[in-house]
Length: 105
Image 1 (cartoon, one colour):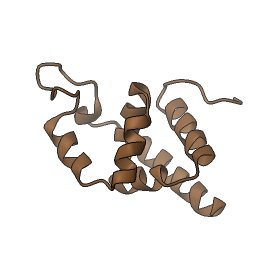
Image 2 (tube, one colour):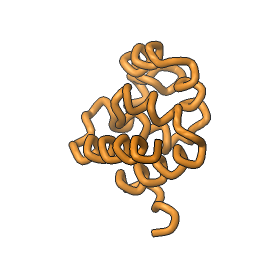
Image 3 (tube, one colour):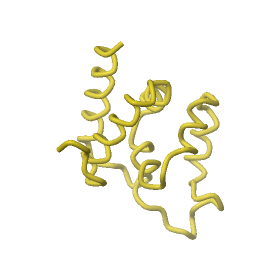
C-alpha cells in the first residue's frame, strides 16, 4: 500500500507542475455559484463518490483549492487513503502550490 501511495503522490505532484488552468484560479464572485463553486465544479463534484464529497467538505478553503488541482481519479484516491497518509499528501501538495509549508521541512 505504501508503494501505491508514493506512486499516487508522485503522479499528483507531476500533474501540479503544470500551470493551473484559469478555472482553478480564484473565482470572480459574480460568476461563482452561491456555495462558492463554479457550475463546472458543481457538475464534476456530482460525479464523485460520496466518501470523496465528504472528504472535500472536511477540507479548509485553502485545501479545497489544492484539491481542485488534482484529477478526479487522484481526488478519489486521496480521499480513500488512511487519514495520516492523506494529511501528509495534503501538506506536501500545499507546500508544492505555495500554500502552507510542509511540516518537518
